Image (cartoon, rainbow, N blue to C red; front, side, top):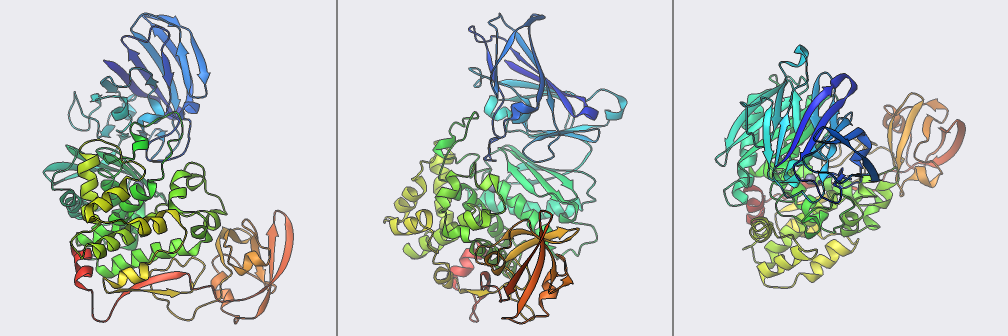
Length: 596
Ligand SMILES: [Zn+2]
């Protein structure tokens, strides 16, 4: 039995102490490696860089250790048992990292557990040990890892089937609020850290139908024995990472339901949080159990390339909000608004004309996960475009099968063929299964949707549901679309700006915008229009003083140099979408789509 012991040994210094015991180390010298990345987040992170010390012992005698490369070590040949102790620095408060201070501890196994090469398939026992000292006497533990000793929320001994499972059970320690509900016959626990003041009863009530809707979609039985939603609340965080029977989420305090909220109303930020929960829960099937062949098994030492992230993230993103409307948590209008913002997001940047969604998947490691100021002009998101491909696929399947099949049936088939069996999905596997399901070629659809940058025929497809796409120009620099415009359409520089003490700092200069054409760049701080001071907050209103065709002098700082450019003002291009239901209402297909 491989054993680990982990203790927050010096919370004030953000150090975890972790000991790995291998009963029978590899005779030629055990190799140990820290993962280079964490499944679900496709970027090389080299977690070994946070290992601040490492020493090895065999029967209390030190054993020499040599570093092999940035992520691995080899210990001298020795008789078992071999004990390897490391100290790991945890100061990354994200769902992908490890974080420890005097308030709480959180870690992903990828950040703290050495991988004993050659022993990865063996079962593992883990002792989760509380920090020493009375200050930590009331700390509790939340994890999806199966428990061997202690009561619920206690520190104690846990187990995992193998290394792959071990690193798929993130752990939270400290003080947290908790709640539970049942869905699909299993217990779902909810843990919230970070003084949220959440209306827990409301949250439990809202999550339950979302989980039930997805369980029903996949045949009525959850693929796990229990489930844990773990949320770390901060001032302005947002993000989530999926695991086999849990998810780690981050959100802003204001995203969670408050006791003062009206019971029948979902604030937009809470709607987004429920969408995030829905997204990660859907991953319990799609990507945690139905996986690309390229991930079976994961190679944690390097990039694992696949063109299929459009399916695993796109189909999941499509169902996250769709589940909200299908489970009655949001109205049809609210769902169409969310879909409108996704269409807008993809249409706004020129990247969608340059990169296909399969290229976006393949290059996730260095492009989607390493975005810079030019990304909207250069790449397309496999989340956003992937959602639209899933929508188009859903409607195309309905059309080609005369309404007898939909994407629901395709994900069910994916589950039967690849989820229940554990067989990875080949790179062309989604297309093959779709074609098998409806008994005809879909080459033209997949060529267009996956391998070209041509526009998807969304407007035409959505008419089948009785829904129209309308296009309009942005009414502010922060406008995300989704809703009709209100008031007059102001002039737009074609930039995204953010606050700066000196003025309005350009975050993104869109390729089609007049600011870029005039020579303004990301990083420039616009300080005045026609000699009058401006900033990010005032910019939209300031532009209201002009008419299309007016020439305006813009003063900006680039580095420390003052630059002046002249712009001829224009209304922004009609790149934002909003969806409306036609006057005769949703069609039968439309009702079936949203009411399932
Ligand atoms: Zn996801």
